[in-house]
Amino acid sequence: MNVKPNIGILNSLIRITIGFTVLAWSTSKLVKRPWRDSYLMMAMLGGMKVAEGIVRFCPLTALFERSQVMVQDMRNQGGNSETMEMAEEVLPQNPS
Image 1 (cartoon, rainbow, N blue to C red):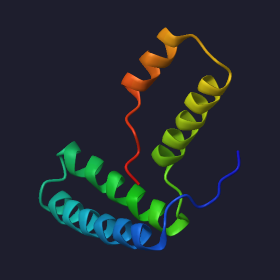
Image 2 (cartoon, helix red, strand yellow):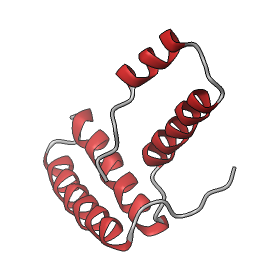
Image 3 (spheres, helix red, strand yellow):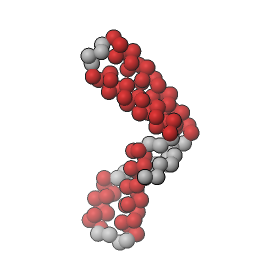
Image 4 (cartoon, rainbow, N blue to C red):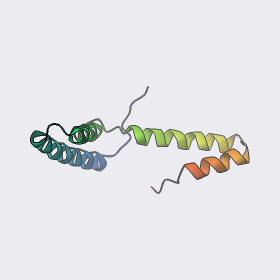
């Protein structure tokens, strides 16, 4: 698997900031109520955002880009019109 950066510098800095904020909030709540699993889940999600920002790779963005390439290939090959309509309904247009 080829892992190359697919998010920008500003996006990565925002992910790191929000990730550390969620991580700090969830660990402070986890100290007070250690039996709550939701705080542990939020800590893991915050840690994932920090890691995405440091590595500058988002798996959801890569999945979206790959699906867009597949839809474009389907259009270029002259695929079935019904299949293309279903693909257009499922995948929204990227505004950027």
